[in-house]
Image (cartoon, rainbow, N blue to C red; front, side, top):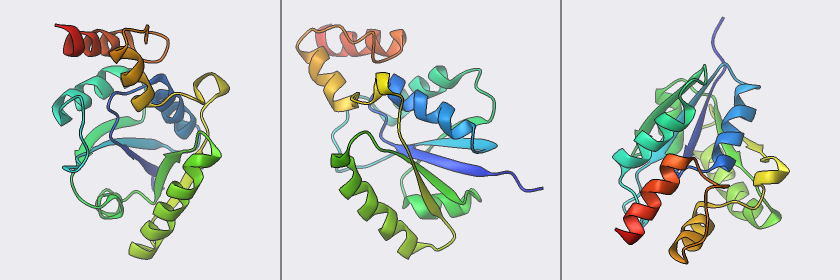
Length: 161
């Protein structure tokens, strides 16, 4: 029997507890979740691809059925190359929906072999975004509730050392 495999793409700059919540939710639906750190030359990131891969690998250590990789091509092309029929996307609010819906329809047009599944994080992580966490950290706020400790430490080092 073929494994039910999904990919969960994103910049993960940095990984948050909201991201990890979605990974755990996806594991209840799929046999294997491949977290894919996207390389986007147009997007300014705080951390390199290698750092983000390391963060994610450390954050999901011990979760069975999870693998971490990176990509610099179209998401649907990557999914097809990994025999994943599903792309996981998180929806936090209605403001996310327009962009995510547009992307899902575009991906469907690019490949009918891949569908998109939208998951919502738990209420405790509903409002968390990487951008917001970086903004809080820049203003010297406590981000330990939103990200793993090793990530919070690296953000602090990056900003203040």
